[in-house]
Image (cartoon, rainbow, N blue to C red; front, side, top):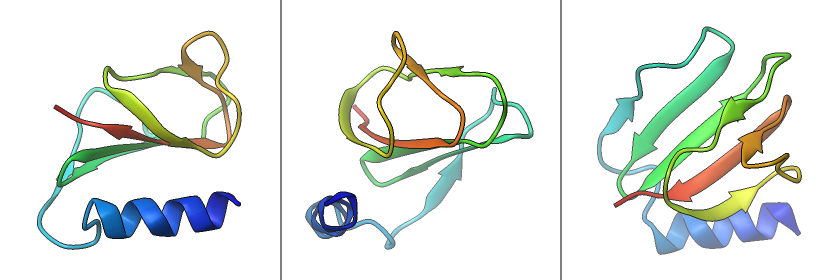
Length: 79
């Protein structure tokens, strides 16, 4: 189900085309980027990270109190 949702969102938001912007302010164990109108945060570290502002489009695991837990990736609609 997650895979199908990701494919649908990828097509809907035209992800994979256009420029990729690496987002500052995250540790070495977090991948944070923006592609078109979507922010992607992948937390590979041991500690949760803050969820950026915007509408949550997709999460690979449940969030914990507004935080992105370890081993979780989220897609967020950017302004």
